[in-house]
Image (cartoon, rainbow, N blue to C red; front, top):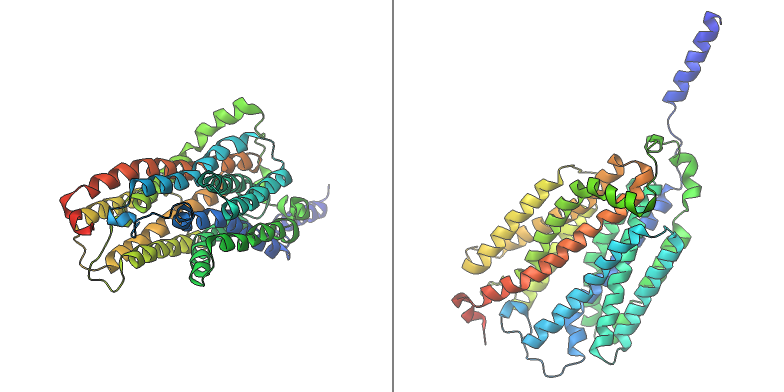
Length: 414
């Protein structure tokens, strides 16, 4: 081969390696589609928690006037019933997340199941004649959320990694807009039943987001297959045994995420209700409501921020969340904060840490894990946050009750 020919070949090879990847002018469809799917997936979960008191009140007309946990005077009946709704909104989703990753990834079947369960949940709660039917409706929401998160989040592995960011932002938006939507409709005078029927628009939006806006992976394959992410020769996991063995490698992602959510929901379920400033411009109910909104704002901001700020050491966020637990635990016992704005700042920080841990965990997985195994890995790791929430729920109640028995809380009783 002549020198000129060699130079020509080298120039061709160099031009091939330095050519920029083709622009994907339709990428916006995937980004918008996953944002909508994240919003719809968690919307029902948030609405059911927001509506817990109203759902209970429909079946019991003898509730005491003040049924707020922060008063430490809630009836045992109310505590049990609200606890049942909280468990119904968490446990079915966790069970689903434990099973779904090991099932065939039939995406359309899974999405149809999630949409069907979401629709059934709103209808059951709207038309329920008994408490058990209403709680079954809440459980359907939880199961739908579990199927959706395990499926759609794993489905992002077939798309541009920024779709993971928009999915997370959508779930954060659900936390904020879901609570505001329910409270706003009730404030306009709508009944719990009518509000639930209006929420039937969410499954319809979910259908549009998945089957109309979002592209199918085959439409993006020319661009996706040219990415560096697809060059790994790691074989795909086959069989139950291989998948279970591989789960051990995912603990470095799951354990920090579990602790972040455990500490976060230990505060939210056990300590939030006990924080109270007597001389504030907000009354007791408003303080709790705005603390929840403050928390959701933090979650929404951080779940939408991974393209601006990203980090790998999630265990640091777990440690920082533990410090938040220490602050709130001592605060609700000794009431040493001089102003209500300090708890508001800590709650916002708590939400930022929780949302940041969620989005950065999966964003890191999108970079670290070979594409051939990413779908299963992400589908399994979503179990961690639900497990942390459930453990927090079981531990928060006895701690809450122990604090309520302290002499300091006599001033909060009627």
